[in-house]
Amino acid sequence: MSTISVVVPCYNEAAVLDLFYERITAVAAGMPVDFEFLFIDDGSRDGTLQVIKRLREKDTRVRYVSFSRNFGKESGIFAGLENATGDYVAVMDADLQDPPELLPEMYAALTQEDFDCARTRRVDRKGEPPIRSAFARLFYRLINRISKAEIVDGARDFQLMKRKVVDAVLAMGEYNRFSKGIFGWVGYRTKWMEFENVERAAGETKWNFWSLMLYAIDGIIAFSTAPLVISSLLGMLLCLLAFVMILVIIIRTLVFGDPTSGWPSLVCILLMVSGIQLLCIGILGQYLSKTYLETKRRPLYLIREAELKERSVH
Image (cartoon, rainbow, N blue to C red):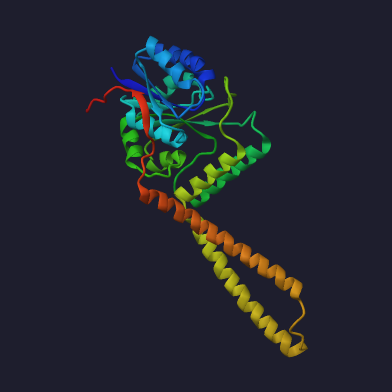
């Protein structure tokens, strides 16, 4: 019988894990496939690991990896994919914003419709602050214009993949990871499933506006060089504008003999140009910093303790 590994990145999710376990096991009981529940404790500071160990005591299908510190959700997803043993691998959040009840339909898409991956997206953003929703939609429009990776608006990390898709994602061993872009970049036949936004079952979100903004910047840098092109175009545009202004000043001086007037506008121009220069240097610095981190070749995560099943080789 085939096995589905359910990868669940967790950071301070003690309040919701019991509810998640009840829902996911109820779904698993009605499916003709074995299950493995792989929880990734991302350096939680509450009782997340203790809850996982308690679940492990009553259900041997529960396994876990506990990081030495908080490495972030991207590292959690990678660790889950790397240690999953199933023929199919699902990734989902513990907060129940990803409905486990979609798993049977996702499994059918892979086994009966010959899709390689079943992914999900939210069709609305009910419950989110309007400004956050507006910036999210703007990000998806922007990234799809400047990147070759297909990133669907409202896409969630919640998905079910065949083993070959998992292996393709793991082959992209980059340090600076943006999973939504990676999953879109590897391609394969994907079926998209839509659902309405669901509030967290318990606990608090770990994402705020600033962290989401930084995450969006990481995504743009990871999958597009358009910001570098834009900075180059700005440089050429300013050079052209400077040349035109030099001609204007020369002609004005020869005709009117007043070369010293207009210093306030000159100050404004200097501030604008210096600001654009700093912006372009900052863009270049972002790409350089990512390259610097890649060359260090640090591990994506460190394990403090784990309870895992050895993966068989097919």
